Image (cartoon, helix red, strand yellow):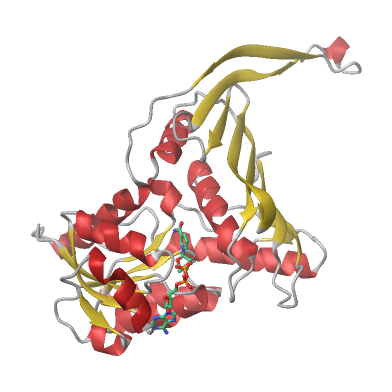
Length: 355
Ligand SMILES: NC(=O)c1ccc[n+]([C@@H]2O[C@H](COP(=O)([O-])OP(=O)(O)OC[C@H]3O[C@@H](n4cnc5c(N)ncnc54)[C@H](O)[C@@H]3O)[C@@H](O)[C@H]2O)c1
């Protein structure tokens, strides 16, 4: 979208309505209400009980049980969608057709044809389409990105993520679509590209057949590999990402409120002397560990304000429809790999995150 099509910039708060007031929706209501860049004008849920439960968070917001009625409200400039993943595409398509900007919770949708249709509708209507890959708006991920881009970590070697707990079983998606979409979005952002191939294993322990334990490996080319373990059955909660660089490495522990990021000046030095080739001399470098200071900002607030700014200025969202679609394509390939017992699935249409 070109910024010239949006000038002059309108500074008024964006009139937003939210559909889906279950577990996650109230977090969006709180942030749309608290931010000066947005004005929550409506909330929608088919369950009146959920509308009653969230009424106190913003008593001024009008209540709807019918999404079509909400779309008729001229004060609604933008719609945020926090309903189950299978409903994202129908709601988003209806909102875009009604001329509303759209923010969709992760994952953007559950199939790439759906995602392609949403991108086309947004482009046709010159509307902002954004997906909430919340972590990209966190001070921690922003800082890791800076460390990588500054060259401080050196050449990247690997990403290793564990995202496990006794999770909320979803009815319509497996654990990869629920949890690994965070890791895929984070790592693709950090390396500024999409992977060239995918391998995945997953197991279901319920009659639904939906995988609740899964392992995903993404090949980003240039000897950069990323492995994600996601699990809804773990008795303990772990949210840890290790970024391994040639010079330094970073450990991101999302459950540590005080020092979520630690930078390790540790690694190996491999001798390139010809006479040592047979003996492969590896030296270990054991340097300092430090924890960068991070501002205390709520990622969701940053995300909401970025959405409002993109609507007002025409700026392309960091997590635009294309980045959401790229995550969906990777998850589809992971599904094929699981069905083929972990076979490597090349991604035929690699799309640069910056394209
Ligand atoms: N960004 C994050 O970190 C994050 C965290 C948790 C959940 N999420 C996402 O948020 C979304 C919602 O997840 P949740 O855990 O809150 O689900 P949930 O089941 O708790 O809530 C969904 C709500 O949508 C309502 N709903 C369903 N179909 C509807 C329809 N046709 N019309 C109107 N209302 C309808 C339900 O009544 C329910 O209140 C999912 O896409 C999930 O992936 C994102």
